[in-house]
Each structure stands twice: as C-alpha cells, then as structure tokens.
Amino acid sequence: MKRAILLGVCLAWASTALAQGNLSANRYAPNSTSNSYGAGSPYDPNSINNPYGRYGSPYSNESANNPYATNAPKLYDSDGNYRGRLSSNPYDPDSVSNPYGRYGSPYSPDSINNAYGAGNPYSPNSPTNPFGNGLSIQGDDD
Image 1: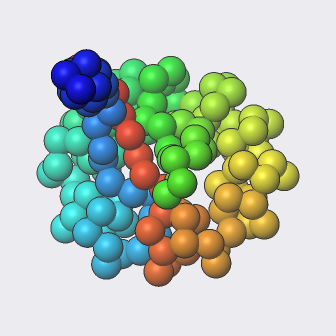
Image 2: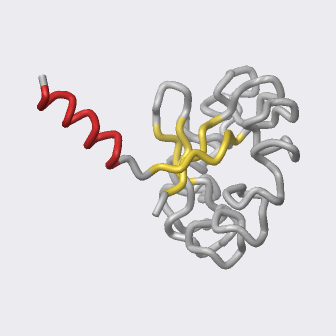
C-alpha cells in the first residue's frame, strides 16, 4: 500500500505541464484565450496574449507567437488527445501553422484548420466553436 501511495505522489510531482487556459473562440468562458479578462488577459504572465510573457513573446522559444519557436505550448482535447503545438512556426512538424503537417494541414482530420476534422465549429473541443470549451493549452513548467 505504501508503494502505491509513494508512486502516486512521485507521478504527481513529476508532472511538468503548466495549464495556460483553452484555445477557444468562446469570449465568455473564463479559461478561454479569447476572454481578455480571463486566460486571454494580456497582463497574465502565462497568457499567450501577453507580448512580454514567456508564452506570448515573439522572442521566447516557448511562445505561441515566435515563428522560430521549437518548444511552443501543446494542445490537448478534452479526451487527452494531443492536437499539436500552438505555434506560429510553419516549419515545425507539430505546429498548427504548418500547412503540410498533421496538425496544421487543412486536409488532415487531426488539424484544427480542418473544418471537417478537429476544427469542426460544431464540436465542443474545437477552438473555432464560439460556445465550446476549445483545446487545453499546456506549456512546460520549469
């Protein structure tokens, strides 16, 4: 029994993801990056909308707004499925901005840029649904 508890504590401690809200078009959801008073606040140090923050700066390697970033935040749907990196880097294979990649192509079913796939505006997980939850944004926590 003690081993199981210890293992659970170690696994919880080893987690290095930092939740940064949800990539969502829902302006009223508090965790939405479209809500300027919630997770989308330009004053929140962990917001992708903060141009001086770690995840919003055009110069940070962990930023969604740096076109050369290689460690941008990751996107996950509510089932825990990986949906790529929230990155403006068009050359990163996992970037949602790579028009030829799995997560950025308008023809890939895993892409948020495909209106018939992960970007379906009627899906509650879609970042384009104005009433949905969108995708969870997870950055690396140091």
